[in-house]
Image (tube, rainbow, N blue to C red; front, side, top):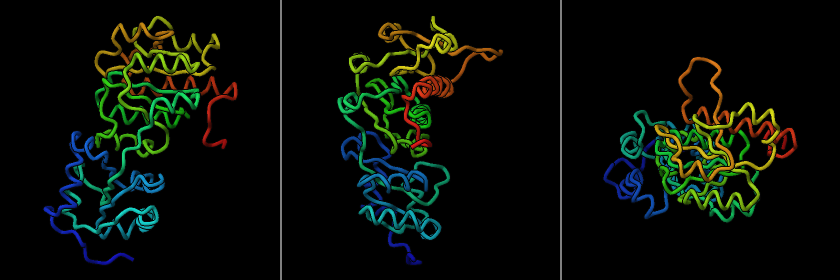
Amino acid sequence: MPSATPELISPRSSRVLAARRLAKRNFRGKERLFLAEGPQAVREAAGHGDTLVELFATVEAAERHADIIGAARAAGARVHLASEQVITDISTTVTPQGLVGVCRFLDTPFARILAARPRLVAVLAHVRDPGNAGTVLRCADAAGAEAVVLTDASVDLYNPKAVRASVGSLFHLPVAVGVPVAEAVAGLRGAGVRILAADGAGTDDLDEELDKGTMGGPTAWVFGNEAWGLPEETRALADAVVRVPIHGRAESLNLATAAAVCLYASARAQRALGGCRSVTAS
């Protein structure tokens, strides 16, 4: 049982200041560390090898989540009991949940992803909103994708909003970052993966693709910017440009919703051929 007295009570502590700086991208890149907030993210980090370096927790949160504290210590992380004010200063959320972890970067080299011969991949090209990036990562994880690739024109994977929006999925599957979109497409195609660009103005219809039976093989979906979609030069790199059909009166789908539809369509087609991984079946 943790002590009833926080050991870190000053927001000016060197440990607190070092953690707080990780809210900024340049410091994250320099230290190759990022913040994971809340019980779900910290629990996943603690179970991911030596990813969790340090954990700040209020006394109340430490008592409520004693299992997470134990897992963090078992993983070799330094655990600090901190005052509410310290957690508020480190946290990037309006209502902190009492747990903030400092984690090592965990992106995967693109070459390693290709070597694994993935069958379902999400490529985020020109995605600028961190919440959308994290949500697409979560959708890819749920659909059974083997990897996610963020191109060099996309948002920082370790932005606190992206980490929160992934709801722990950041720790579940390989993610490559900073890959030029042309390099990503060429590498995946060379690994035998079909490239589909998701675009509302696409010439091919997702329902028709499913009906034709063309989606059972290895597939990478390329998703574009939230406001203006994919530029012509990126669409030209794809084997097909596919639109999600709108059967009702909605003007369009947002990025994360469209990504979920596309990824699950591929997952269903691949599962019918015994190709896509399934967490529930393993």
